[in-house]
Length: 316
Image (cartoon, rainbow, N blue to C red; front, top):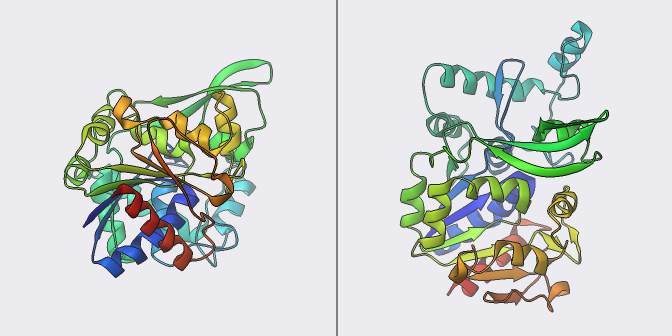
């Protein structure tokens, strides 16, 4: 069996732990197509937060307390930059993490595409699955906000890290998406998949940027494999992060049903054939989409693997 997962963020990375565990049990191959909308250039370094979250989590190096970055991280570089008064001061680079960004940036500057760079980085971390960025092209999520009496677009990282989403927010823009092409291997993975899973990631800033790549969206929507999504909303609240603020900006109901309706049925040009919701949301229905309620809290790898098995059963 060949499983493709559309994923991003910390929730998506933790979901992949369960996908990998279940895939090993059934002898399946897994390809993760990872969001690049969060990517940003800071201090001359190319930073790919979602790719790194997946890589570190599956490689056993993610900080379990913070939920992001490297375990046992130190912050000497950040402190020295602050002493120089270098901006942006609101975005901190850990020392261990900086090494990853240095290697990535050096390879990108040498002409390697992001997909090849990601594969090279994974040689160290051995995630146990194939990881591919959604696109090798520049694709960034920007947010139109009101700040200091001015309406302007800022990078998603500034909205997320600096402002914590606590500014008047009007819309999200996926800069570069219209001209972006799927990264090497993406279309082949989707065409050869037996099932496509949509991780319980933020639907607005983790999944939507992936689907904003036109050829990628077309491949998923019109491909042979059934598409099953897992709700990132449980009991009317996001499992983690600020999906509620993102959804509210789009006037989407913060509920399992609301996100399912936003994705829409694949038979009508949307994304989903099946939608997995938590048992607390058993009444949630998405017209045109098969819906099933199972426990969705990812408390450990075993429970997450059970969710994946439920998703595969729904796909069948």
